[in-house]
Length: 248
Image (tube, rainbow, N blue to C red; front, side):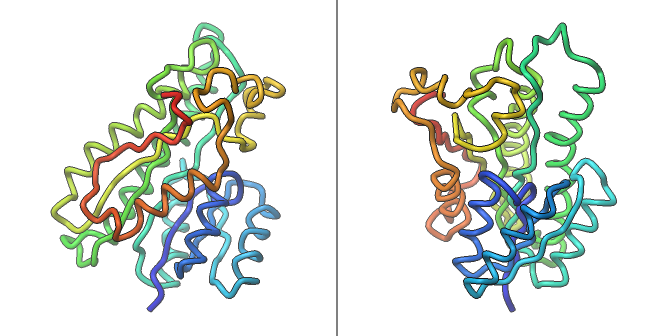
């Protein structure tokens, strides 16, 4: 039976690159998306064109009902072995004293609550304690978790700090149950999320602050994620791997 991977926020950026690479090595992939169905369908179509299996599933990870539906779709494909907790949002550049409650709740609900709900459902399926056969959870952190993102979005940085804590705590909680939990900590990666900051050309503006003097590619982050999903990292859990060109 084909093993299954769920990639939340899998229609664009790092999620898209990861979904394509997981399908290439044999996983059936659930490509979750929030609203951009055409982008998700493109990912699924690309996977199918190369002989792989994938389905696009709409859902807001901040909704418990939607999360259950995402995992129910995965259950139909086979045993869940990989969860990529990638879904997340960034808002326009702002200081904390300019942020509304609505902004804070939306970001924390998606970036933190959504990751916790998805991890919960994954553990219920993967854990030896629950009759599963083990698996891997990869959380999406950010260099912002250690840099703080002052005057840009400290709430985003805080949400990624929560991913670090989730990774460390959950990895220890389920280590004896066949589940490895790790995270990647990307720096400046050339994806669409930077458009949300409202700063035109933000990626290019940041190059001089990166020791390697260039932004990263989504595929470079996806390659690290694939290693963390593989048997080559079988003794690695609770790790947070920087993929930031030295800026973290």
